[in-house]
Amino acid sequence: MIIPWIPDNYKTETDIDLREAYQYYRTPRGQHPNWQNKMRFISMDAVMAFDAFYLVEMLLTHPLQIVVGSKQGAFGSNKDGQELYERAASTHKDLLVMEGA
Image (cartoon, rainbow, N blue to C red; front, side):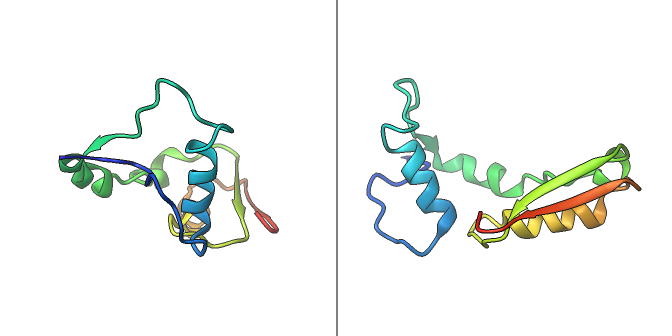
């Protein structure tokens, strides 16, 4: 079964992440003729199991600045950025929160 990454019709205004993804990828602003907006449903388990923070305690040892927006969205980028800041091994790190983003 093939499903779209981003829905063809987006009507919910409450989720900032999906709204902005739709406004970028599904409008002339960011559309590209080679992008098909398709994925196999069977691939969802691999997407959901992906751990971007695996080994951050060992690998993030250099100076680090993490930039997050102040608005919470469905993808959890704000929360993930704060978790990454806490877990990173670097002793020289900064968490920059962009107000309104």
